Image (cartoon, rainbow, N blue to C red; front, side, top):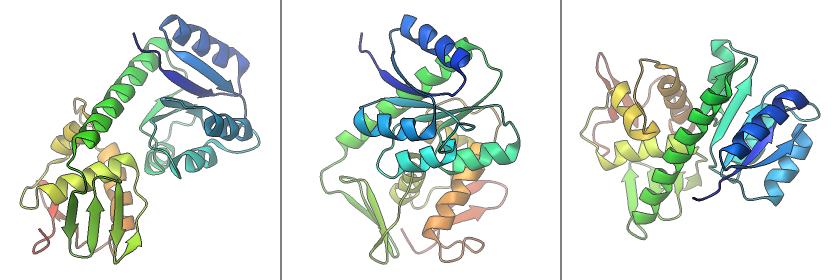
Length: 236
């Protein structure tokens, strides 16, 4: 059985020890960091397959740690936080987190979320490796390179998270198709849709902010009212 390495960023020793001990019994290798500064150093020096990240940590905030990680990596990030408002969740997901776990939690729930995130990331990596070398997708001024995982608009780089990249790729590969929120969640998150629109809404909003001239009047990814989303007319 392959052993996955997890970076656990949690400043409460009791919670950190509880999670570390439990995950190690499940054959995970766990690296612990107790503040944001240490977390960034450990992430830069280690190769990890997933990050469990508390938002309320000393020295550097969890959100800043996430920004640091997302500059160079698409590794799954699972937020664990006592902050449970919709705005907190939207902010975390919008900055690139893959999931949000609210304290108090059960270790069984955390394990299930970890397995799901690693499974999705592995499927995504395998699909990326299978893409034809140098395959280019275009729509208007947008250019997506599936080989080096880059997107440009008018020749300038557009920094997308893994989820944003996959959402945009769906539209570029299927320019005539309309996707419901349920279909987007199933295809991008590789998981059952349970009616929570928040994850799709947040990622769609962030994607539009990055690729559109005016996100309030989108040209690339347009809304089909009452159904879902599709690529704008005349771009495919």
